[in-house]
Amino acid sequence: MLNYIDSKKMGRSDLGWLNSHFHFSFAEYYNPENMHFGVLRVVNDDMVQPGAGFDTHPHRDMEIISYVIDGELTHADSMGNKHTLTRGQVQYMSAGTGVLHSEYNHGDKLLRFLQIWILPDRNGLKPNYGDFRFKIEDRENRWLPIATGVSNTDSKAPVRINQDINIYAAIITNGGILDFTVASGRQAYMIMIEGSADISGIRVGMRDALEIIEDTVTIKAEDKTHILVIEMENAGNGL
Image (cartoon, rainbow, N blue to C red; front, side, top):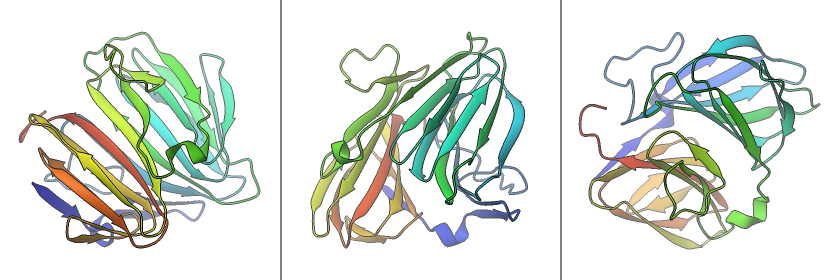
């Protein structure tokens, strides 16, 4: 089963220094019928102006992944970590019992990144941080494993999170074709980061998304496309 999500109907926020598309209810955008997709609670497509960013603020009991699309993202936290990531690179933070962090664009170009929040498999975990500097070419015309659950010994994904979830990225060249299968008992949220494609008969443009439940889709790139997939247990109507 497929469900198309039109980016034009997503929540929006424009604070001047920050322009965001909200895939799910967040901040001033509240829709009780669009709170989550399984354990996926937040996907924000954030664009941050140079010299601006999110001041130090708290998180707890959430698995947080930031996927950099363009520009530079600098993270600093109360655990003593401070790192800057660029295009195609990923940072991960398990907020657990509580952590403070900030995210800034200290570069001279617009920063665009996906902010992804996943509900953990249990609360009260010890806070943790990690990042991985993937090469952008490693996802060309194939699915690059980005993240998986800590107990998944079958995956080669270097980022490990406290939930039964798998995250993949791909860049498909113009005219290229790539399939993605969501197995029985599973569901996936597919995000068109850049470009456009025909996905099993549905035209999906930049920032659009698809909910995929126990199905296989065929992606036919109309131009150079950049896609992220978050795959998880099929939770039905609840968590």
